[in-house]
Length: 178
Image (cartoon, rainbow, N blue to C red; front, top):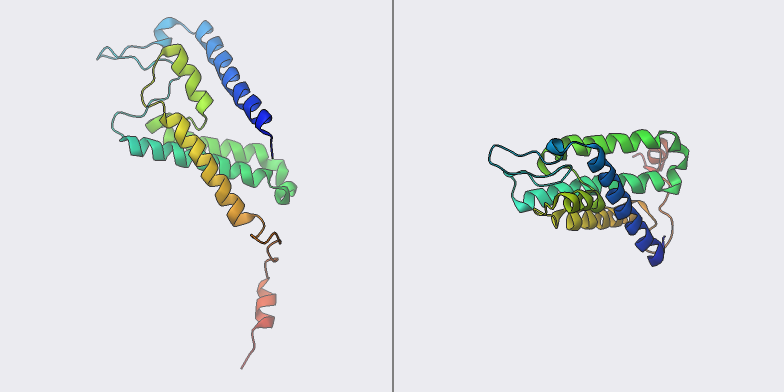
Protein backbone atom coordinates (compact mmCIF):
# COMPACT_ATOMS: atom_id res chain seq x y z
CA UNK A 1 0.00 0.00 0.00
CA UNK A 2 1.36 3.42 -0.86
CA UNK A 3 0.77 6.68 0.98
CA UNK A 4 -1.02 9.68 -0.50
CA UNK A 5 2.31 11.50 -0.78
CA UNK A 6 3.78 8.58 -2.73
CA UNK A 7 0.69 8.51 -4.95
CA UNK A 8 1.02 12.21 -5.80
CA UNK A 9 4.75 11.82 -6.45
CA UNK A 10 4.11 8.78 -8.64
CA UNK A 11 1.46 10.56 -10.74
CA UNK A 12 3.64 13.66 -11.09
CA UNK A 13 6.60 11.48 -12.12
CA UNK A 14 4.49 9.71 -14.75
CA UNK A 15 3.29 13.01 -16.22
CA UNK A 16 6.76 14.58 -16.12
CA UNK A 17 8.30 11.51 -17.74
CA UNK A 18 5.75 11.57 -20.54
CA UNK A 19 6.20 15.31 -21.08
CA UNK A 20 9.97 14.88 -21.33
CA UNK A 21 9.66 11.82 -23.58
CA UNK A 22 7.23 13.42 -26.01
CA UNK A 23 9.27 16.64 -25.89
CA UNK A 24 12.40 14.75 -26.95
CA UNK A 25 10.50 12.99 -29.74
CA UNK A 26 9.23 16.39 -30.92
CA UNK A 27 12.79 17.73 -31.04
CA UNK A 28 14.12 14.91 -33.23
CA UNK A 29 11.09 14.42 -35.50
CA UNK A 30 10.56 16.51 -38.66
CA UNK A 31 7.53 18.81 -38.54
CA UNK A 32 5.76 17.18 -41.51
CA UNK A 33 5.72 13.93 -39.53
CA UNK A 34 4.76 15.63 -36.26
CA UNK A 35 1.71 17.34 -37.69
CA UNK A 36 0.54 15.43 -40.76
CA UNK A 37 -2.44 17.02 -42.47
CA UNK A 38 -5.14 14.81 -43.97
CA UNK A 39 -6.83 15.47 -47.29
CA UNK A 40 -9.60 17.18 -45.30
CA UNK A 41 -7.04 19.59 -43.85
CA UNK A 42 -7.18 18.06 -40.37
CA UNK A 43 -4.34 17.04 -38.10
CA UNK A 44 -4.53 14.83 -35.03
CA UNK A 45 -0.98 15.63 -34.03
CA UNK A 46 1.86 13.24 -33.24
CA UNK A 47 1.30 10.35 -30.82
CA UNK A 48 -2.10 11.69 -29.80
CA UNK A 49 -4.78 9.28 -28.68
CA UNK A 50 -8.10 10.09 -30.30
CA UNK A 51 -11.04 7.70 -30.65
CA UNK A 52 -11.70 6.44 -34.17
CA UNK A 53 -14.36 8.56 -35.89
CA UNK A 54 -16.72 5.59 -36.26
CA UNK A 55 -16.80 4.85 -32.51
CA UNK A 56 -19.38 6.18 -30.12
CA UNK A 57 -18.18 7.74 -26.90
CA UNK A 58 -19.40 4.69 -24.97
CA UNK A 59 -17.50 2.31 -27.25
CA UNK A 60 -14.28 4.31 -26.91
CA UNK A 61 -14.74 4.50 -23.15
CA UNK A 62 -15.31 0.75 -22.84
CA UNK A 63 -12.30 -0.06 -25.03
CA UNK A 64 -10.00 1.99 -22.78
CA UNK A 65 -11.73 0.74 -19.63
CA UNK A 66 -11.32 -2.95 -20.48
CA UNK A 67 -7.78 -2.67 -21.87
CA UNK A 68 -6.62 -0.89 -18.73
CA UNK A 69 -8.55 -3.35 -16.57
CA UNK A 70 -6.77 -6.27 -18.19
CA UNK A 71 -3.37 -4.64 -17.70
CA UNK A 72 -4.01 -3.79 -14.04
CA UNK A 73 -5.51 -7.22 -13.36
CA UNK A 74 -2.27 -8.69 -14.73
CA UNK A 75 -0.29 -6.36 -12.45
CA UNK A 76 -2.26 -7.57 -9.44
CA UNK A 77 -1.59 -11.19 -10.34
CA UNK A 78 2.10 -10.66 -11.00
CA UNK A 79 2.64 -8.66 -7.82
CA UNK A 80 0.65 -11.06 -5.63
CA UNK A 81 3.13 -12.58 -3.17
CA UNK A 82 1.55 -15.99 -3.70
CA UNK A 83 2.84 -15.87 -7.28
CA UNK A 84 6.45 -15.04 -6.34
CA UNK A 85 7.70 -18.38 -7.65
CA UNK A 86 6.51 -17.42 -11.16
CA UNK A 87 8.61 -14.24 -11.30
CA UNK A 88 10.94 -15.41 -14.04
CA UNK A 89 8.36 -14.65 -16.74
CA UNK A 90 7.07 -11.28 -15.52
CA UNK A 91 8.45 -9.33 -18.49
CA UNK A 92 6.87 -11.76 -20.95
CA UNK A 93 3.51 -11.53 -19.18
CA UNK A 94 3.48 -7.74 -19.34
CA UNK A 95 4.72 -7.69 -22.92
CA UNK A 96 1.98 -10.07 -24.05
CA UNK A 97 -0.79 -8.17 -22.27
CA UNK A 98 0.38 -4.79 -23.59
CA UNK A 99 0.80 -6.22 -27.10
CA UNK A 100 -2.66 -7.80 -26.95
CA UNK A 101 -4.28 -4.56 -25.81
CA UNK A 102 -2.32 -2.47 -28.32
CA UNK A 103 -3.19 -4.72 -31.25
CA UNK A 104 -6.86 -5.07 -30.38
CA UNK A 105 -7.71 -1.63 -28.97
CA UNK A 106 -5.05 0.51 -30.68
CA UNK A 107 -6.88 0.98 -33.99
CA UNK A 108 -9.96 2.19 -32.13
CA UNK A 109 -8.64 4.45 -29.37
CA UNK A 110 -4.86 4.34 -29.50
CA UNK A 111 -4.78 1.94 -26.52
CA UNK A 112 -3.47 4.52 -24.09
CA UNK A 113 -4.05 2.58 -20.84
CA UNK A 114 -2.32 5.44 -18.99
CA UNK A 115 -3.62 9.02 -18.63
CA UNK A 116 -0.10 10.48 -18.65
CA UNK A 117 0.60 8.78 -21.98
CA UNK A 118 -2.34 10.68 -23.51
CA UNK A 119 -1.75 13.98 -21.72
CA UNK A 120 1.74 14.80 -23.02
CA UNK A 121 0.94 14.45 -26.75
CA UNK A 122 -2.30 16.40 -26.23
CA UNK A 123 -0.36 19.26 -24.64
CA UNK A 124 2.26 19.41 -27.41
CA UNK A 125 -0.21 19.08 -30.30
CA UNK A 126 -3.17 20.86 -28.66
CA UNK A 127 -5.54 18.03 -29.62
CA UNK A 128 -8.08 17.41 -26.86
CA UNK A 129 -10.73 15.37 -28.70
CA UNK A 130 -12.56 13.21 -26.11
CA UNK A 131 -9.51 13.53 -23.86
CA UNK A 132 -11.56 12.92 -20.73
CA UNK A 133 -11.98 9.28 -21.83
CA UNK A 134 -8.24 8.76 -21.45
CA UNK A 135 -8.41 9.84 -17.81
CA UNK A 136 -11.73 8.51 -16.57
CA UNK A 137 -11.75 5.07 -18.27
CA UNK A 138 -8.24 3.98 -17.17
CA UNK A 139 -8.73 5.22 -13.62
CA UNK A 140 -12.10 3.49 -13.26
CA UNK A 141 -10.79 0.38 -15.02
CA UNK A 142 -7.86 0.25 -12.59
CA UNK A 143 -10.10 0.61 -9.57
CA UNK A 144 -12.60 -2.00 -10.75
CA UNK A 145 -9.97 -4.58 -11.71
CA UNK A 146 -8.05 -4.07 -8.46
CA UNK A 147 -11.20 -4.55 -6.39
CA UNK A 148 -12.20 -7.54 -8.49
CA UNK A 149 -8.79 -9.14 -8.00
CA UNK A 150 -8.86 -8.40 -4.30
CA UNK A 151 -12.37 -9.79 -3.89
CA UNK A 152 -11.84 -12.90 -6.00
CA UNK A 153 -8.27 -13.86 -5.10
CA UNK A 154 -7.50 -12.32 -1.73
CA UNK A 155 -8.54 -13.24 1.77
CA UNK A 156 -12.16 -13.81 2.66
CA UNK A 157 -14.08 -10.97 4.27
CA UNK A 158 -13.50 -12.45 7.75
CA UNK A 159 -9.73 -12.14 7.18
CA UNK A 160 -9.04 -15.87 6.99
CA UNK A 161 -7.28 -17.39 4.04
CA UNK A 162 -9.40 -19.35 1.64
CA UNK A 163 -9.13 -23.12 2.03
CA UNK A 164 -6.61 -25.00 -0.04
CA UNK A 165 -7.95 -26.40 -3.27
CA UNK A 166 -8.86 -30.05 -2.97
CA UNK A 167 -7.34 -32.61 -5.28
CA UNK A 168 -9.60 -35.01 -7.20
CA UNK A 169 -8.39 -37.81 -4.88
CA UNK A 170 -9.55 -35.83 -1.82
CA UNK A 171 -12.94 -35.27 -3.38
CA UNK A 172 -13.34 -38.94 -4.31
CA UNK A 173 -12.37 -40.12 -0.83
CA UNK A 174 -14.88 -37.78 0.82
CA UNK A 175 -17.87 -38.90 -1.28
CA UNK A 176 -19.75 -41.79 0.37
CA UNK A 177 -20.28 -44.74 -1.92
CA UNK A 178 -23.69 -46.46 -1.64
